[in-house]
Image 1: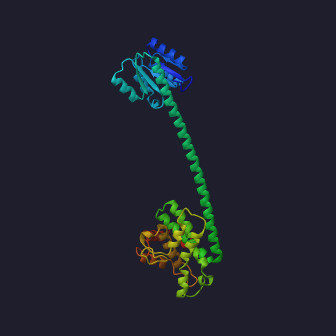
Image 2: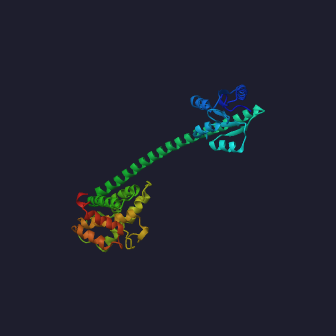
Length: 353
């Protein structure tokens, strides 16, 4: 059989000089480099100093037995090829050496040393495969790490691009209707404060902030004279304004950008109510995203507490009374509780947002 690892270094640990020398000469003639040790202690020293490719070890030796030598290097044995050559051949010895991690067990005397050479080559071949597999796994892990890092970089770039798109849209809304833009900024601040109070995870928090920034996007399709009308809206005008949630959703759906957050759904749902009384779809309860439920409360509080073209501010007390009245019916219970806590503890103010 052809040697798998030419000039591989073998360590023979054997106290019988004739047996040791005969194995060494035969294996050297088979193109191996051979180190020799008279007992386990010498074998351990040579193993540590020379780092051989394979070890052939006897069990019964003075100073340090083969079992003790195997125990001393046990942590390396799963990947370090070791062949036990012993004259006892007892079942207990075989079991003990295999438990310690020996790769093979041959019984002395070995009448045909070609058997030993075959065992050596088989063990070196296995060790070579293990090494190649480790290198492959390491290379694979490095490649996976590199690809993961690249995907994360691209994802971050995509997020920044999409955030820029949202900011451009918000700027467009602001130029057309400064009032709507100021409303969206204040709603965003309150919605994010509520989200923090509820300990919303970062992904949802991020998406909520972007959705809130453009939640009234659909109002770009509403005539400006209706949006800025100083008097009471007619029923037809109010119905027209109510279409802005659907229009905003349609605009975001028709766009080419695919957001990693459910922005268009949040925009679509921000006037829905948990009892199904909202619009445009009449959704209820758990059909509504938590982000939508947060935005709904923030939107109502800001709208009532701020000046509107058709009426003066109703004040924050009236706004908080409204969400308290609708807690558990129109508005999510936990969201309302969080919002009330922010104002009660003076951790948030619309004036400073």
